[in-house]
Length: 440
Ligand code: ATP
Image (tube, rainbow, N blue to C red; front, side, top):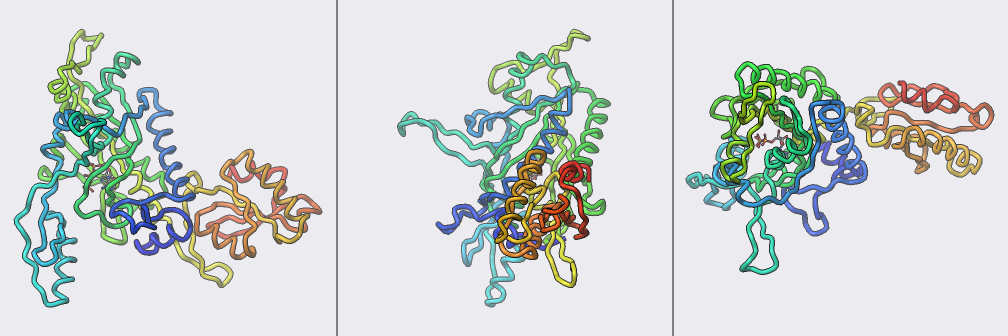
């Protein structure tokens, strides 16, 4: 497991993640994904989409817009309740969240080093929604919000999905997309961002206590198993129930999957929330459109309950990097290695010619590369520097397999296949190489 500085540095150096708009000094809480980061993030999203949507008969996917009218957020309770308590330092006027003891202590320590004593202002209510305007002229422009959570895009389309797909309860709607929060203190790299991505499932069920408990348990278990699939050790994830004082305004019950971070202990990765009928009822009330469900079997009409699974994608990227980062020794040399599960690795296989100035080796290596690439699209050709340097880079970016084409390849069509975690090497025939790798 790594500390945060090691991950920030690896991400910048190897093209995973950069500070947003860096050449202009950056923006706090905003990061950009580079060539390798975007692949890792894509693989996490794909894994979510496959397990929560594609492989399930009872769940539909959708993709709602980022911009939504003010009325949506009044209905959902966000304009009133999506707030954090804000306090201000009387010495430097920096603003903090009154409920984050750790940040406050750190800030007080900075002043106390200079023999200063902070006195904090009374807490003020600060709303996290990011607003903007749409419309060509000042007088006609309307206030809209960049969504603070992707959830509401699903609830406002509940009737559309019912009318167009005719699902029977229980059924779910999942989506992936950006959310925006004007966090008071964005911090810890990708942990608390102002622009981030979420992956969510809203699972609609009959409004009945027993069914609610059963479905809630099912999705808690399903979510935890899914999260372990990102490559976490048993002891580094846990489920924790929210106390009644911690629960969001809509929640009847709420649990978090937490990750044991090296930088500040257990932190929320994913939430499972019993939202009851809060959202559908409120949207019915505010929009005037009936969002109830007619049950053909019992001939009754009711508003379903919603069990939500909600995870941050950027947090998953950060936690996956922290968990899988390792340093060990191979052949007497220190190396950094990212032990990513193969399905998440940005590059699956790297192919090298042993020497880049031998045309016959380069030609053969390109042939081998093209053949593997047909079976495994995320295959990379690498002839930079010497072989040691190439292994170091591939280990650091988490590539599970490296293939080296050498003089023996020209004689008998075998290559050296090196496995990342053990650094063990074996000779494999090019004829079976792609199959050999995919079944490993
Ligand atoms: P926190 O208590 O950490 O602010 P939250 O309880 O407000 O999080 P939810 O509203 O439940 O979070 O959002 C669901 C998921 O979205 C979280 O589990 C987290 O992974 C992710 N998330 C929320 N806020 C942020 C943020 N500012 N930056 C990155 N990811 C976030």
